[in-house]
Image 1 (cartoon, rainbow, N blue to C red):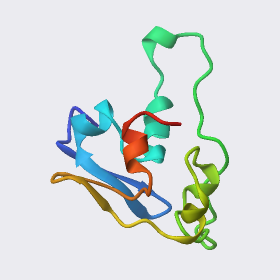
Image 2: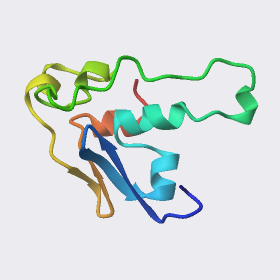
Image 3: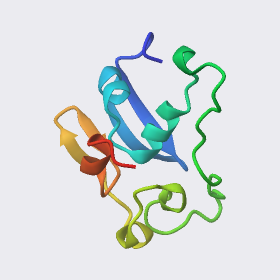
Length: 110
């Protein structure tokens, strides 16, 4: 993707959860799902190691959970995530994240 796009929109359960310039997303994701996707990319320096996988299963699209659809799988989920669907917060003028805890995600929290 980095070779063909300038900006990326990451989707989960049919909703955009993060938009940003491609290099910003690769350098520091602002949504836990984006972080999970990037962590699951095979790397040459980790040859022979088990690949990272996001815990749990994607939701049934006919029964998306209330609040943030990613909350059942999210390592940062708090009670607010189960009730309040996060808007696309402005991380900076060119970047948005649909996570109540985007600041913690940028800081590298898990």
